[in-house]
Length: 105
Image (cartoon, rainbow, N blue to C red; front, side, top):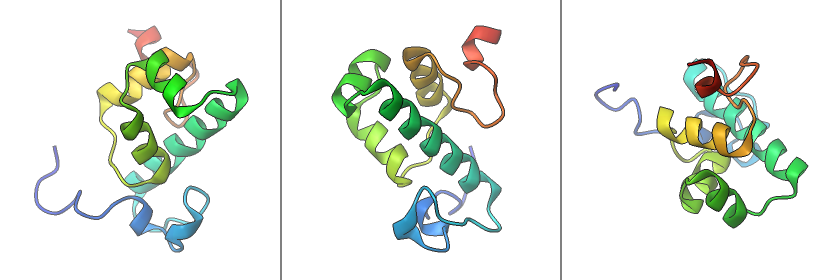
């Protein structure tokens, strides 16, 4: 895990226009762009499936607030969270992945 203050600023706050998250431009911070791509993919999947945050939490085993935080760019999601979301929703969220990562293991 990165030390120091690398996680003290939220991904959203690294965007040129934080209020436009997850569609704002993020320059100079590739890790924040990964979180942005995760948030976009997750939001699209929830909309596509017509799922509420509560339903998504039940399906995935991820706390509803953790989903809210990821969508809002106010947290740095961990591998367990991303994997649970991918498995529960049946979709790859990680940028460039063709299928949920656990399906490849």
